[in-house]
Image (cartoon, rainbow, N blue to C red):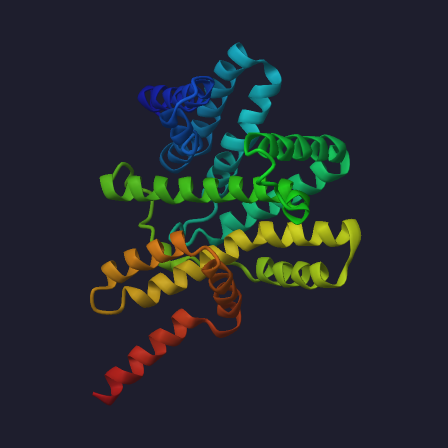
Length: 300
């Protein structure tokens, strides 16, 4: 790395920290920027590698620690920088960057570990926070709206699932930015439709799904929570498959955009997309499509 690379990596960490500090200013813009706090770290990981990400993580964490203390800095480091650090470490040995299935599966598995740690050691605080949040909602809406108990039980996993989703989106955006603006020549081209998960994550999802039906009480809630967390990468694979099919059609880009708008306004479709993500492990829809193309060309 050159001195310029060190300086840019240092600045990337400061940008992420400033986005975090901006949360103290309550405005729609600062909340919107909060979703992109991991972005500078992922860009550093892809362009400058592991050591560049270490510099970015250090500078960002120090700035957060100065204003909010060591505890906030540790949380900032774990939630925003560590996934990029792990990805940068993986890129040393993994040349194929077209498929992000492996890294998002590992991030999701880390989410399960985080859920288990929080549930075992901080269960009382989580329950207290969920109850306080529910009471706040009830009081603000004059007792007309309340969060169902089933949702409150899944509150920690919902937070972790949202965190994983934000990380994955930032990873995808960082790859798109680097590819489109040709920021780095050593980063291979990335295609979302090639996203394919390793087998173990699919089997783990199926196992937890079965346990969530069989088990009761706290263990059933844990199984449901871990199923919810693992549904994030499975759903992403389902989206990649559907997009792969749509872009093959006439007006593929328009149909793809229309599909995502429908998903945005009709969220229950995500359950079907998740099922497609699981079935792809057994039927490999993209390969099936490729074989059909080859057969059709042969007939001609």
